[in-house]
Image (cartoon, rainbow, N blue to C red):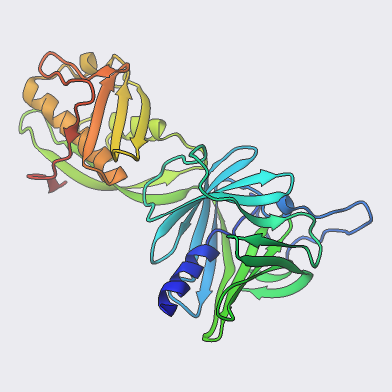
Length: 350
């Protein structure tokens, strides 16, 4: 029971991260305080892009993690949190009252924009005003309170005078989070009678996040053989999946592999239906003329597209349409809603 609670708390800790897209020295910038200056929640939890925040863990194998903002707009941000146990996504929202979490999903290993999903949470992470004693209730039972404004915290990245926010939990446990204006979360401590588990900022890396994906291609139109190869995908904040797959479908990642679509073909949309666990990909009407392929080779191209999307989204069902209509070529026609099934049989590594 204690182990389950511990893992849950570590997952809970992982959301509380955020920094500006700047190169930081080991010493945080000094902000001159005066009567007109007031720290706000959005200063303590700024939404940033194309930056990886690396946290060192102490006391548990799941405490180390990386945090990356996958999607950002003016008021919503989607964070991917990666540790040795799982990947998760969280949606954060800026409000006049502060920063709150409105969505969470664990075991989330693919990339998908979830910002506009139906909110399933309403938990205030940081609440204005930023002053000692300001407290609020989270999850209808825990008290969260600002317990310090200028608390010193030593991290592998440097020393900070941070805002301290304490969440009082069950069984004499508490979560203490530390935020620095202009940087974001610099650390957290999960404190229990069994000891402390710390997650402390170690490194800020500018650039996209990298993710290993598996791609499928035919080797040529003579042997009619489909192969797979791994590829390191570089994902920038707010990248469109349609653009990413357009690139790897048009330009194979290794020599000797056949493109899956012509340069004139455009991927109009890629959607993942969570109710049916099915991917839908819609192409422009240049798809079939761009192939100019016989029936057997066309099946290999379809198989490669279906397997690539199935592997990425961890599903076995892919629906292909052309300008919104069910896939149809001179060799094959499917019905509305009819799916292609992922098939990894008789496929070797390239």
